[in-house]
Structures are given as structure tokens and as C-alpha cells.
Image (cartoon, rainbow, N blue to C red):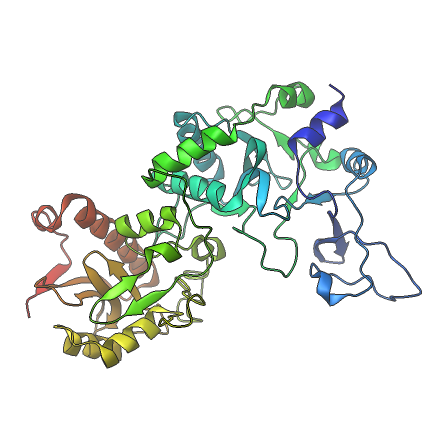
Length: 430
């Protein structure tokens, strides 16, 4: 097969638009390639929103543009999310010091599900992309759930651990928002970086580039969408493919808190049953919580609940949900929840909640320690409290350990957890 044809058969995305890399001084980035008309626009504006420019004329991704990329004359970016919210591929981006180790772990767990996965070292040489190719376009929300679930099962990402080398997925959206083309990924084999041993596919164990990149590309296997569906079902414990495409999540509050199962995907419903918090990969991807000097800075959005059925109550944050609980609900621990809410350090951490048993998690400060408090809504269960010092690094570790403890409670039961409780842990019965 011709090299160009082989390349285009693998790295498939939007063909009606592509991105080009630009740089000016110390600044650089990507923007959609447009037909520049000096009589209409004096400035080649950086924009991914077609509505921002009535005269925008985006250039299609042609063989010539791919050839320019391979020859090093133009660094090209691919928009993988197609107009029907499917994609021909998915890629996971890793950086930080542990990128290679995490890539290996991810490739290993993919292999256990018979998913062919291939590692490319990034242009910088300090990260990697793990690529998975499909034989036909596949719904992005399904492929993203598969990959994110595998990342969790491999221990690469977790709710509280912000040190993961995992950065983002391509595509990074379940569906188009109507404001652009979705995120882009730089195409591999860009000649200037390829000559440095980067932007090329490498053997995961040795981290050495394959000698003949074209021969390697010709050996790549594409997983079938039928196999993907089977994997999707096994990971989500679903018995059918009647999955509602995810859009907005609605919570209804009456005497109990109800999440309308028909309003969310089967995968998300299964996840909410089993996991501690609403899973939001954007939280891990943005990595805003424990940046140096920013612990007490802006609030971190753990999840967003918005839109949906106008006849039901909508909540955009844990704070909003708790507020409505305190106003409307006649719950056993309402007084305790109100007290904890008043003391909660909202400037450090957003209020989050646990699904089983339904409880809110607060962060309080004492004279010498922080206290992470889990208070249930309406059960006989005692209040659980984890204590930690006021050192930033200690708080980070404490949150990670609380995540592990709650996972143990979920998996093994509260009785098993209480047989070997942490040193800095206490219970208060009310």
C-alpha cells in the first residue's frame, strides 16, 4: 500500500477542516486552516468557532497537506470528532515523569481486553500518546467510557489523585457543543521531531522507535466496532445496547434524592452505583487542585449537573444540592449537615457527595489539623472523620487515602473497614 494512503487510512478524522501550528515569539498554538483573503480580513484570527466569522472559509485536509506535514513543511493537527459525534480512533495523552510507566500499564490492560493499542512518543519527547484505531466510526461517548474505565481499572486515574500522568483524550468530547470542531491532536511522523526520535511510534518495553515506521504502521490492527460494543457492555454491566447518549444529568429532590435512570446513559448509571463521586474526567485533566501556591485559590469544579427536564430540580454543584436538602428535606441528620456546611472550607475544596450510603463530604479546619468529615443524610451510620495536618502535601495525601478507604467501604463493607481503621480516624455517633 502507498505510504500516503496507509497514513490516511489510519489517522482519520474531519476531512473538511484541519489545524495548523503557529508560533509568534514565545507563544504558539493551533488554529483551523483558512483561506486567507486580505481584502476581507487584515488579521488571520485564531478561532475554532465558525459562527465567529461569516467569511471563514476552512481548508479541507488533502493529500498535499499530509505530505507537507510528513516533509516537515507544516505541522498539522487532526480533528478526530466527526460531525455525527463518532470517530475512527481514540488516543490517550500522557505526560509527567511517569508517562512511560502509565502508558505501559494502559497498553497492558487494553491487551487483556484484546484491544490493540500503540504508543507514540510525543513531539517534546516528554510524553506519549496511546492510539487505538477502529475499523468503522464509533460513537465517541462509548469509546471514551471504555478508555476512561480502563484507565481507572489500571490505577492510572482516581478521584482524588491529581498526580496521574494522564492528561486528556482525543476526542475529548462525547459530542459537539455547537461551538467548534472539538479538540485536535498533532499528527505523528512530523519530520523535524521524527529525526530526533520523537513524534514516532516506539516499542513500549524498550521505548526505542521502530526502525521502519511505515512497516510498523502497516502492521497496526483496527478493532471492530462489534468488539468495542462487547467490551462496552462488559465494562458497564449492561445487558443491552439501549444506551441513551449522554447530555445533561438531572437530579430530583423529594423525600428522597432520585436520579432519573432514563435521563442518563446505562454506563453512567452503572458507574454511579459503584463509585464514590460523579466521575468527571475534566477534573483530572484540568489538574487545578494542587498546583503550587494555588491550594487556597479558585474553587475546583468536581462535577456539573445542568439542563435536562425543566419540570425537575437541577443542581450545578454539590453546594446547590446541599442547600436544597437543607431547605426542603426532613432528614435525620439535617442539623449536623447544616452545622458542617457552615464550617466547610469552600475556598479550599468544593463540597462533594458519596452515593452509597448517600452522604456529603466536608473539609473543616481545627487549631492544628484539617478534618475531612463524611456525614450521611438519613441513616444510622456514624459520622466518619479523617484528621490530617495543615501541610498542603499532607492534605493531598489525606484526600488520596480517604478515597482508598471509601473504596474499601464500598467493596468490602463498613464492617471490614472498621476492623483496621486508619490511625487518624474517628467516628461520632449521633
